[in-house]
Image (cartoon, rainbow, N blue to C red):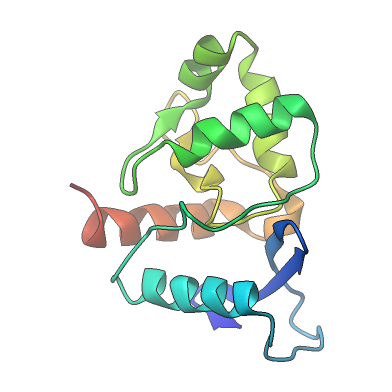
Length: 152
């Protein structure tokens, strides 16, 4: 599905949503027929239209370690339009900031698990996830979008 970030690919299994990620420009695409993928697509479209940032009730089934799932749960608790520092989350979860960065980098659910809301101590991007392409610009774009439409 086309978005301001680029083309998003969605994948699910019987347990829930497994992946929301950016596709290569030349990746083949098709419109989903699965109800969960259609609902996810509707919500992503609503997100970029400024109507909602709520993905909280979508069933999720990402592959990851127990630690990554703890971090991803903490990311989902960050309100749209707000940010947390890697160090803050690390202190909260009893780990190191680099471990938080590693879990963010492994996040397979772009937007749904909002790793873009975690910033470095200087307030900048601080994320190098190759799976999400030129991330610093996209991260700033998402944060600016959320500040404009969703910050309470």
